[in-house]
Length: 345
Length: 179
Image (cartoon, each protein chain N blue to C red):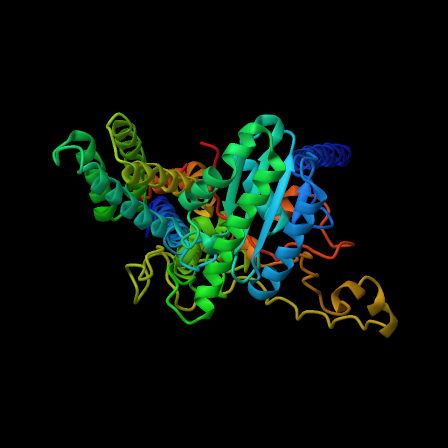
């Protein structure tokens, strides 16, 4: 392949990569960045200042005690996405709840689509199951939502969810048996990484050493079989005829014998002594072999939280958006959700 | 070994055999990783699909308990749910478990619809709704689980040459997806 063709291919690859990044970026734009207040994201403008302040104040206290976060977000539309998918992406992008306990809750209202959804973090799946979330939504939000009193409905359902989450931890703190199951401690070793088997590995895999030995053995035998008569001729040595005075059958199976033979012609001259090399000529082209310092694996990606890797698919990096580093006082605790949740019946 | 052609044939046969053995071991190792994720989750913390399946079997049995108050025990919709639960519990392979889960979801939906036509009391009506909500939620979790992504990657690799041939010869099959 010519040099120009290589350059051309590289250009095309760069263009394709840029196009992909733009598409990914555009997809990520559907999920807005969290607000500075974090716990209230009233993009649809339906909540009062009092309700917003109330939600923030309660969350500050809850987060300090338990790491739990109950985020209320209102949007006008979902950009064609299913509300469950949208909530899932938003939850994991904003990293709601603590990284250790994954105890976040997201209440999402899509005003323009006349719908709502609530989603809990991985650590609350059993203590606050989706059915219970559905009950709370139906009992405390549905009537006001249907009537367009979004502020009142959000206030009531938020208080109900807060009370429920608070009771979970209050009950646990008092030493009682938690109604749910205990979350197993994460194992540090990376059991889940899928390493794409390289082509070589696909061929030889775990039997690489044995396979390699067998193959090399047969290759060597084959090469010896094919090249042995030519090797002897190049040395100026000719094989004896088959019939010899003590090895008539060609013991090694190549039809020739290995015992001593007569040389024809004069012995080869001794090799000339190697030329003396001046000391300075070593620097020419040899720096590359001396190398410099060692290599580095490079810094890892600047990920804020390890818990996102436990989420079932969507990671923050995949959105390509800028990370929420504050400027505001509050931010996500690093929690994640596996999906599920409950919505409007 | 007198004949170089014979030697060549033997060498080629040995190479092919090594490739098949090595490839099978490699594919088996990757399949084992996907299985591990199915049982233990992507992070190895036990939050795998299998755990969710056990939870779903519990929910389905609860729905049957409610249904038996209004329908005969040998009702086909009840039987379908119980059969699907049994299939999940007895299945040894992940593919069979995933297939049984699809049947369970379908059977539970049918039973839910069936109970909607029966005059349930308030408590059982609430149970019916809540159990189906949890079943749907759990199914959503399974569909989003990292197992699906890993299984899909493995299945894609299995379709490529030479893995597709090695897999067919040595009996390595693709994984069923939970979505």
